[in-house]
Every structure is written in structure tokens, then in C-alpha cells.
Length: 257
Image (cartoon, rainbow, N blue to C red; front, side, top):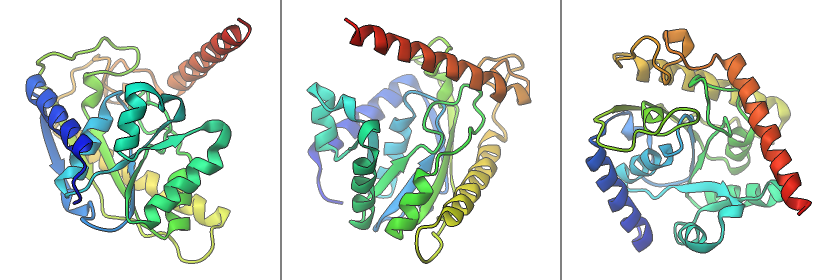
């Protein structure tokens, strides 16, 4: 692994934060993260800080992963960090350019992190998947590595008070075997099939991550299906739409001065 001083410093800071919090991180399947060559690392999304666990998983195999991040963050200190960590800025108004940058990185042997759900899951269940991970995999010819994180939502997620202190929370990480893309040209059928397989694999991994994890009845970070008070997937979808409407209204007010 080539030296990347900024990434090295950030990794040290993340490890220090986790030690201070007393997080008990348990990883199964580390061997599935390739030590060389490109791959799409597809991860579920339940917490604001779960990218920190993703980075440590990459380092566990001697890799610096490449995050896809909102292009509007490409300024100031965050922009400087993105540049030196080779993050890929995602501009929704120029999505094709961001996509091509990700495919180029994959062909160049990088591990590109993709959150197929796009946004945090308020229900802590898997949401419907976007097709980007599958399309990148097929077009670049690189595999998808499915990965799930369970427990990070207890630290900081939507609608629940943060627990950033010394909490000793267990965090279970499960990594599955790489999924090879179908051979041949990029087709809608191929993308749909690969996306469905990815979601199925990640669903299985999520169940494995939840096994043996103590989940108190009524806890807000526990899915309703498992006795918690988190919103059901249907209610979570409504909350997501309400949040999106508020953001759009705020953006319109700002544009209007």
C-alpha cells in the first residue's frame, strides 16, 4: 500500500476515537476484501459515522478505500481532505461525470465505496437499492464485495439522540464473498439481476450480524420487526419524503433570498 499521509493520520484518529468510545468491533469476512485490484465495496447505511468503520475494514486488508461523497463538500478543510484521500465527488446535476470517475478508479485497481440505499435507513432494515453499484461493477468488470455494519446506529443516526461518549457498544461487521459481474455488455436486465443478488446477499449478512446481538425491546435503534421502536420501513419512507420536502423548501427559500 502506497503511503498516503493524510489517510494515515485520519486512520489513527478514527482508531483513537473508537478506543475512547470503547466500541467493540467484531469483523467476520475480512479475507473477502481484496488486497489488490479493483472492487465495489457495497455497504448498508444506518449511521452518520459508519464510513469510519468502512475505512478501517479497508486498512485491515492494506487498502485505502475511495469514498463517493457529495460534491458540495469539496471546499474548505473537508474539500482538502477529500482531495488528499482521493474521494470521488458526486454532483447530482452532473451524475454521469461522477459515475465515470468511479468506473475509472475501479479499472485503475481502487476499492470504491458505494451505499446502494443512497441515504440512511431510518428503519435499520435494508431499503430499496439504487443500481449504481451494479452498473459500476459491470462496466468496470470488477466484483462487488457486500458488507453490512450493525450497531453503529447506536452512536449517531437520524431522529435518535447521539451517544458519542464512552459507550462500549458492540459493532458487528460482516463481509461476504465477492460477487462477479455478468460477462458482456451493460444491460438493464443484467443490472437488475446483479442488484437483486447484491440486496439478497446483504440481507443474509444483516441477519448474521444481528445474531447474538442484544436488542432490548422497545429500543429506538432496534427494527420494529425485532421488537424495537424504530419506524417500520413503510413509516420510514414517509419520514424520508417529509425530510426531502423540507430540504427542497429550504433550498427554494434560500434561492429566493
